[in-house]
Length: 399
Ligand SMILES: [Zn+2]
Image 1 (cartoon, helix red, strand yellow):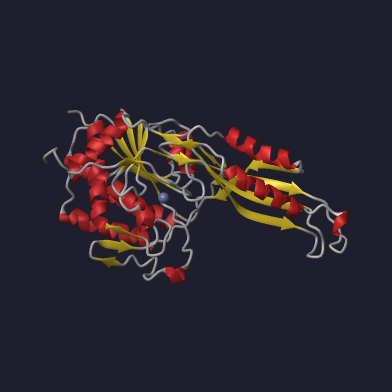
Image 2: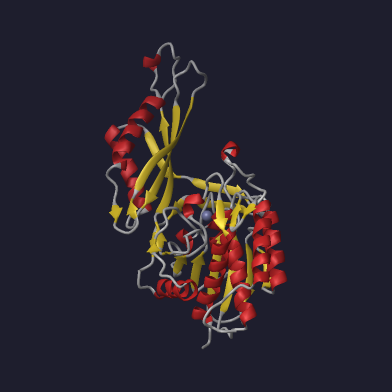
C-alpha cells in the first residue's frame, strides 16, 4: 500500500463500528470493566495483535511490532461514569443507537470511541506490513474516572511496560492536546465539643467553625495562581458532612471535601499550606489532609492512591507534539489546533509523574462527555484510527 495515507476499507469500517457498538452495549462503570476488557482482548486476538491479555489490576494490553526497540503506547480507559439522570436521555444509554454517522450511548465519546480507534489503528499498521523498529502497545486501563493515572501506574511500575511516547485517546475533536491542569482532593476535619442543643453555649459547634472556614476558602479561591496556557488554579468545597450524637446535640465533628485544580507551578505542598493558612487565620481546631482513593478492581486487586494528580504541559515544539500534528495534517488534510484539555486524564501519571512525552489526540467532542445523549461521529473514529497508524509509522517506521 501507499505510505502516504492510511485508509480503513469498508469492511474495516463495518467491523470497527460493530466493535464500538459492542463496547457501548457492555456497561463498564469504574471497577466493573471485566466484560468490556474480555471483549477488547477478543477483538485484539481476532485482529492479530500479539500477547493480548488482562493484567493484575484488570487493564488490557495488546502489542504489534518486533518485540524490541522503542515503544509507543496508545492509552485509553475502559470505565465510564454512571448514568446520572436517565430521564435526561432521549436514547437508551446502552442500546448504542446509530443514526447515520452518529452513534449514541454512555461512553461512546468518553472514551470507547477512542479505544476502538486505537485497536483499529494498530490493525491498520499491522496490515500495512510496515517494517517497524519498535512496538505499539494498545493499553486500555481501568478506574480512570475516579482515579486517573492509577491504571497507567500499574502498567509502568508493576507490569514494567516503559513506553517512550504516550498518546492519550480521550476526546479532543481530532485536535492535539499538550497538557491539562492537575487535581488535589483534600479533606478538612473540624473538631468541636458536643453539648445538649438546649444549652448550645456549653458546646463548640463544629458546623459553625466549618462555616467560617468555608468562607475563608471561598476568599482563597479568588486568589489562586494562573498560567497563560493551562488557565487558573481553582478551589471548590464539594461536600460537607457533620456528626452529632443526635439531632438535638451540638455536633462535635464536621468534614469538608475540597476539590482543588492545580495549574502549572502549583504543588501539593503549596495547596495544603494555603488551606492551613485559612485555618490559622480563623484560629480554630482543624486539620487538612490529602484524601486516599481505595477500591477493589474486578480482578480483586487492592487499589490505593493519594488523591494528588499533578498538572503537565508538553512544549509546543516538542517532537511528539510536532509529529502528532503532522500525522493529522497528512491524514486529514487539515491543521489541528494545538490546545489543552479542561479535564484530567491518565497524562497526570504518564507525563506528570513518570515524565514520559505524552500528547492527547482522540475522536469526539469533549463537551459531550459525561452528558445525556452522549454521542460520537463514526467518521471521526475512523479518522482517529488512521491518524494513530500514521503517527506510529512516523515514530517507528524504518524508512
Ligand atoms: Zn475520559
